[in-house]
Length: 194
Image (tube, rainbow, N blue to C red; front, side):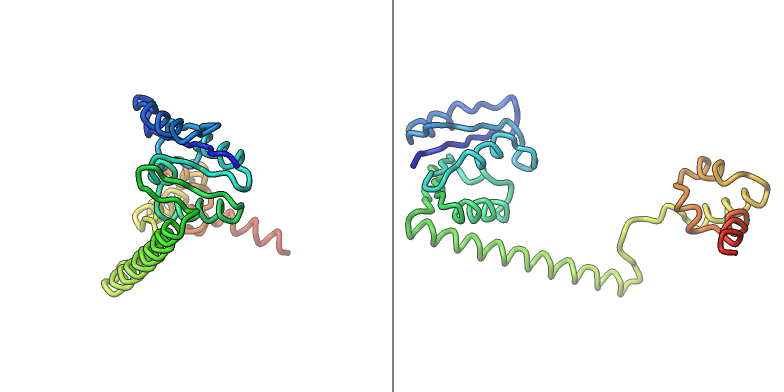
């Protein structure tokens, strides 16, 4: 069993020293670090730390926000470590997952995260329903507007090649073919089916 530390600051200009001092006071035999935003998925120090941990080790951090980018992410990491028989200690949050109080706080965190997900889902569904009631459909804006479709039809009728139309309108080949009936394409398709 060993204490393994993890420290993170959000930018290269910030300093890890205070976290490292606290982790050393907790007798961390090995310390992994990242100088990157918690919102980034490619935290190589955290990845290496999680791979290094063995059953019965204790992951020591100064605060939970150093470990995870969201409550959901935090619970996911701690649950995964729990399955591997690894406890987590957050020094400044004064929570240790190997104590009854620490486990209790994590159950509360889990309930809060689930409640938060449910509220977000309910708000999203209500917002979509309200938008549909006002006649607004979700999704991204169409690239091929009615004006562009009309322009494409005129250009094609006047002999402009589909390739040139695509370039002029700034749309993909698939988008053009989806929205505009191109006689030369129809002829090729009919010949292929015969």
